Amino acid sequence: MGVRLMVVDDHRLLAEALASALKLRGHRVLAAAAPTSGAAELVISRAPEVCLFGTAAPAEPGAFDPITRIGRERPQVAVVVLGPVPNPRGIAAAFAAGAAGYVRHDERIEGVERAMVKARAGEVAVAPQLLRGAFAELLHPAVQPDDEGQRLLRMLTPREVEVLVRVAEGEDTRLIAAGMGIAPSTARTHVQRVLMKLGVGSRLEAAALAARTGLLDRAAAGTPQGPDGLA
Image (tube, helix red, strand yellow):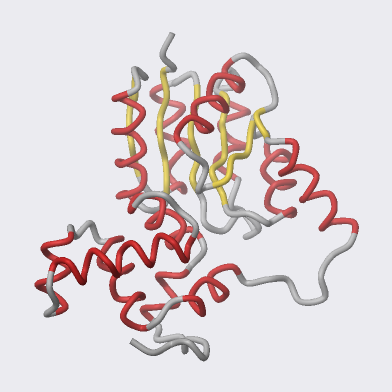
């Protein structure tokens, strides 16, 4: 049986894309919206079975305040957080606020579905390896925590960063090629290299990963790339 749900994310494009994918798989999506700061009012008014709550900064103060309010006013709604990893404090904060689950933002759609079904059934929806990693980092914190967005950005050349930004904006191969003044075959090659370097299997996954790790914000700010940063 399909899940009656809502998708809320600070990036509307991601919320709508995930909602569309879940609709195609037989779930009833009541709403796809942004930003997460308005999630509580929407969930309280629509009362879904599950709310998918996407956030790029789970460790930020107040990030999960909407979840706390949802739990207080609509306790029957199971909230599953979609967030970056590793971030043990963010995972801990999510459950402390009342979340029923925590799923990696780059999880495949099947994994998101499993989390939704488990959360609706009243089970904790979190991968064991995710908890192990979180506990390990909490017990043995790094002196300088890894900046995932910075690390990923250093893997890409300036040309590949531009391609990623265009992918995140929803451009297809033809538009990327026209905008960059290159052949469609060259644009396609650049896209494939970006997906390979980021370790994702689709453009949507690449856009989600870039948005949630802050890679797009860093790219827009002109953060310098690493030694391989030549087009």
